[in-house]
Image (cartoon, rainbow, N blue to C red; front, side, top):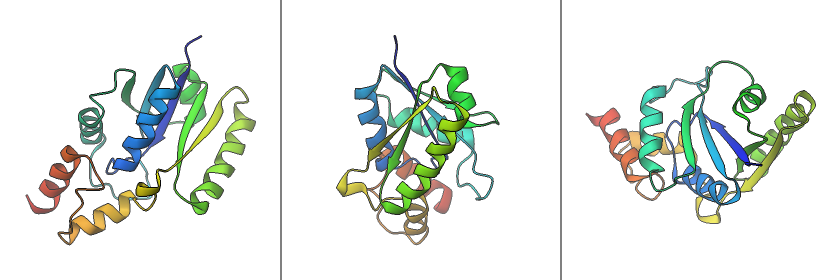
Length: 161
């Protein structure tokens, strides 16, 4: 049986924390599908197509990972459609844990056959968040340690042309 995991997120932008989670998930599962979702409560820096392109550039060294745009609907329904029995979620801190635990519990009630797997953030990346990255970049701060090189270039282009 092929073990397929779905890693959903807005990835705006895709950070080294996301990359670390994907790399670790790729070692645990036969196939990892990154689902780029649109967060309707936030104004995005990148379009869905731009995010997919940047993520693909960032994960080119991983043969068992692919990137898709998540269509509308519940993540657990998308997982089931894709044959994914696992949802991967990165946890940076207790706030993330509480939030993700509640979603995982609800998902388990909706789809008992889909299991959520939490991967703790690497200590050196536990403070990295997409919103903080955008704030640092907006004021010309150095983000090289926090995002893949391709993402860093794309962010600079968005803010400074």
